[in-house]
Length: 99
Image (cartoon, rainbow, N blue to C red; front, top):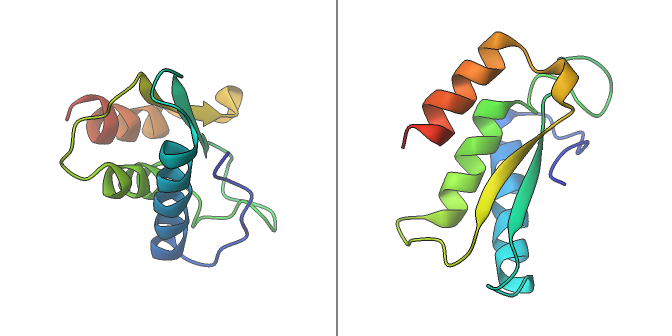
């Protein structure tokens, strides 16, 4: 899970996701599939405001992965799915699935 951080800006949230992804990749054996949970909450509330969004989350995961191929089944899990908008899916498709 890389959400409910209360971080104030997209760059700090992306950095948090980057760091948590690196830690997870280091801690989880390569024989285990790994999903990084990122927020799909609407921009409201104390913990999940506009800095926690899919664009910043994907940027953080991409920074963690760098150019090296992933050595396991790996992906991003959007939480919570019933709050994902068509715009969120477009960002996910463009930034995660198409590259």
